[in-house]
Length: 336
Ligand code: NAP
Image (cartoon, rainbow, N blue to C red; front, top):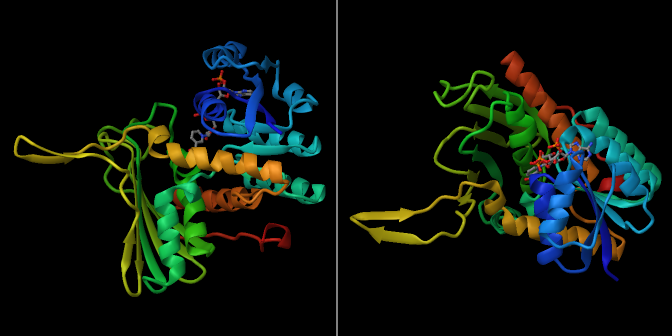
């Protein structure tokens, strides 16, 4: 049976997910859309030729009996409210990161989902679905490099708009690393520190850029992540895991290498949508399949909470300049 999906928020990623459900994935169709800007929802509906209804707001869409599952791709500040409403309606919900903008908001969702008695929420952390990160995970789990001791990583964007301010480097950018390193290492963070190198001339007044975030895990693995959101040259994600017996590196995205004019070159992507296009496809197909099977296995509300708690400690570390503790509560059996 085709899963009937309603999409709340038809901006950049909402429109992209609607396109992939319509043109790329199997087993689902978008039958309902909403956006604060209804014209935007209409535009997406028309551009994809959808047989869908545009609703006035997210709550109306969630309550419609024909909508089997909900995608929350609106502005982050609205996620908690819509996810809680979907859980209340007993509907499966895929929520883009962040699950909620506060750790308490994530905890409210965890509590509501546990009270509902089954997993209904998948969070849009797509890196565990990326083939490169999967290869890293397999190498670590196989013991090929011995115990992991360190991770050196970088998250670089070409540029960011004026509205991007220093804490967003954590909550909007680093959040993907915060999720994927826990998964790669099967470990939890215990502390965070943030240091600021010399500021790039391309960074506007309200963002300290670049930043280096240093994390320590329970097992003692040390992680350093460069977050550099005005690097100019491209969208570049790097990850190198150093083990006792070897090093594994995240593969570069496939690109043609060209020899020309006494030069050997390879192009670098500039758009996050292109870098992770396949992982977005795989993560959303996994959600559709999970709903069809009545069992979600992708990133859970607990992952959303862990990222929020760790992110808050990183922001505190940005402000204090100190090593800040990360205190994640024990993971309930429900999320094991
Ligand atoms: P965007 O382009 O600004 O789209 C958000 C859309 O939601 C806008 O059309 C906005 O309308 C609409 N909206 C805001 N409040 C709403 C509400 N109460 N009800 C319905 N619609 C509402 O942003 P985006 O880049 O798509 O990001 C959306 C979410 O996805 C964010 O949480 C972001 O962090 C996340 N995201 C995740 C990834 C990833 O890699 N997983 C990548 C990109 C984005 P207005 O523009 O009129 O306010």
